[in-house]
Length: 421
Ligand code: ACO
Image (cartoon, rainbow, N blue to C red; front, side, top):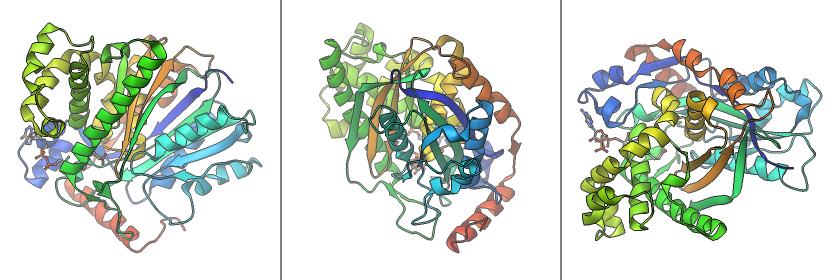
C-alpha cells in the first residue's frame, strides 16, 4: 500500500467548560497566572453523564457516519488512553457493540497505555499494520480518549477532556514519513498514577516540565541525525512548515518550540541568522543541566523563536488552549487545530509532531499532507470536525458546579463504580 496515513478524523470534547479566569479568581492566584502564565483560555470537563467510553463512542460513531465508512470495513481498532476504568477489560471492548451490530467481530487491537503517549503507540500500531503482511485491506481505526483531572492545587487548571478518532489506510491526505521518526524512552517518576482508587495522578510539576524538554532535545537530535543521513543535508526548523506538540498547557509549547531553536543554534543550523546568533551567543557555555534552569536562555530563545512560532506553531494551538490537556488526545487535538485553521493551504506541506507521555516515552515524527479524494480530503476533514461550531456551542459553568461535578465523579471513581453498568 502507498501513502499510508490518516484518512479521516473526528473530535469530541465535552460541551461543559470553565473559563480559566473563573478558576484564577476562585483559586485566589494572581490574575493572569493561568491565562498568560500557562497560556490557557478555557478547560473542558466530563460531567456526571459522560466519561472516556461515552466520548470515544461518540467520536467513533460520528466518524463512521460522517465519512460514510461501513463498520464492516474496520479490521483493526486501537485505543490510547491513560484513564483506567478497569484493570483488565480494554476500552476497545466497550466500543465493540458499534461493530457487533453490523456483524463485525473480526477486529484486531486492544489498548495502549503510557500517560499521554498511548494514542501515538496506537497510531503507530495501526499504520504499521496497514504496511505489514497481516493487513487484510480493511481500515485501521485509532481512538485517543482521556479525561484529565488533577487534585486541587497548581495542576488543576491543566486538566481537560476529549476523544479523537482517526481512520488509517492507504492513499491518505495525511501521510507518514516513516523513516523520519525518533524516540526517547526512559524510567522516571514525573507523573504517575499509583493510587488505583483515584483518578488523580501524583505529579512532580517541575520535574515533568524538565523531562518533557529533555525528551524533546533527545528526539530532535536523533531526528536531525536520521534526516541528515537520509537526505544528505542538515535539518533545521526551516525544513518543516508546522510543528505540533503534545500540549499540557500552551506555555510549555512556546518553551518547547524555543528549545528547538536553541538546538538549531547549538548545531549551527541555517534557521539561525546573525541577529539570533548574537542573542544566544552568551548561552553557548551553559552545561545541558544549566540550560534547563536558565530563565534568561528561556527568554532569549523565545524571542528568537517568536516569528517562527507565529507561523509554524500558533495555528495548532486553538483546541488545546480552549479545551485543556486531553492527555492522549492532546497532540492530535493540536493537529486537528492546524487542519481546522489551514486546511486549504496544507497540501504539499510537512508537519513535525512531538508526542510526550510521562514516565516516560516520547517520539518525534513527520507527516506530509496531500490533497486526496473526497470524503478523505483535508477540506472535508475540516468540515466534519466542525471545530468552530463545537467550541461556540459550549456551556460555561461557574466554579461551584465545576466543583460539584469533580466531587461526584471522584466518588464514582473511588468506589470503583462504572457509571453505566
Ligand atoms: N501573570 C502572568 N504570568 C504569571 C502570573 C501572572 N499573574 N503568575 C504566574 N505566572 C507565570 C509564571 O511565571 C510561570 O511562567 P514561566 O514558567 O514562564 O515562568 C507560569 O505562570 C506558571 O506559574 P508557576 O508558578 O510555574 O506554576 P505552578 O508551579 O504553580 O504550576 C505546573 C505549573 C507545574 C505546570 C502545574 O500546573 C502542574 O503540575 N501541571 C501538571 C503537570 C504538567 O502538565 N506537566 C507537563 C508535562 S507532563 C504532562 O503532559 C502531564
